[in-house]
Length: 177
Image 1 (cartoon, rainbow, N blue to C red):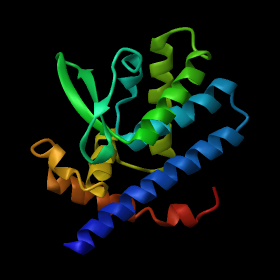
Image 2 (tube, rainbow, N blue to C red):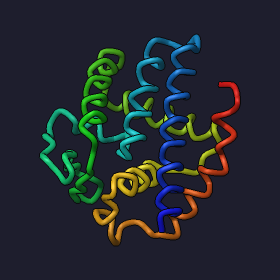
Image 3 (tube, helix red, strand yellow):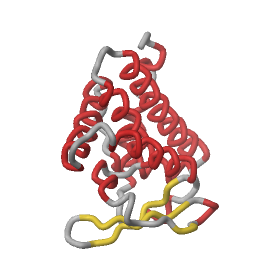
């Protein structure tokens, strides 16, 4: 069982490293200032496994203490269903900071969310990843020994597929950005 846990942690660490690499590449690109701000925010949301639309609620919801010193973030999802996401304190603080920077670059919340979706999709296309924020969330929870909070919401088969898919991309980290 230890080998499976190690593989999941390695897959999540690889995903985190790829999001960081993407942020750095976007910061160096001659893109508009807004893109240099929005890419880190999209990647921070992705690392925490949050949907890009979470930014619409970040000012109106307050996280509460959760298991293991983490935070529980209750997000209203389509169908008026509240999903409780477990987020790291560092990740939550980073998202809030980046969101305050990004808001000044966008006239409307809709354009901000659209840009976040664009960056998230571009990140996956650049690295040839078939991984969703929910996959990142499952990997994160597994790595934090909190997988029981996904019980019934995420299949073991999907987790296995995502882990193998990410580990097959190890060479991307060795490649020059």
